[in-house]
Amino acid sequence: RAKAEEILRTMVEEANPALNIHLFNEFFKFYAESCNVQALQGVLRLSLSTRPKIALDSYSYSYIMEGFIRAKQPNNALTTFNLMHKHNVQPNQFIYSSVLRALALKGDGQSAEMIINDMIRNEAVIVPVHISTAMIACIRGRNMLFVESLVKLAKQKFQRLDVVISTV
Image 1 (tube, rainbow, N blue to C red):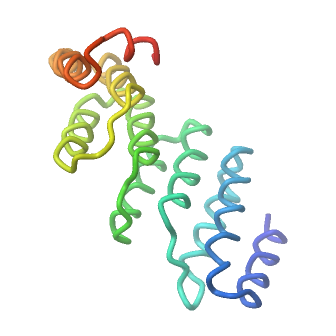
Image 2 (cartoon, one colour):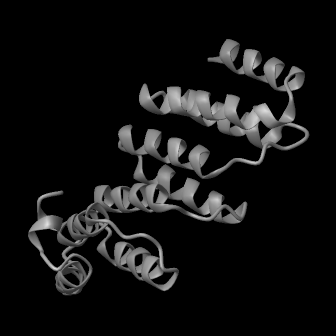
């Protein structure tokens, strides 16, 4: 891991700054897919400490969150989501999906409700998997009132509940 980080650091110092984000994203993606959380955190620390600072994008955060979710570390995924907000990166449908999956792992239906409401307020793209994942979070967290709201939202958005239920 240390050797890989040193290679990445050298590549960043020698590369065109426009390529740096692509380099980091490839490392984030690789470590996320292999569930190597320590290496993922090391590359994240490196990205935050380089000068000039690497401006992570929504892909970066999505890969990082996915790695934490695969490793069953939803709290780290949610911390990454907060870091993303701190760096003014706007969530996309993949980020929202990752956040809802992390909340489902935790059984945090109340936060899932807040995320869905945030998506509605920001007119984000809502797809069936968002609603079904939020339902899982709510059921695990015993937040049955919001499940009813999600059912209404699914019927409103997709005219059919079976489209949402089939994604569970």
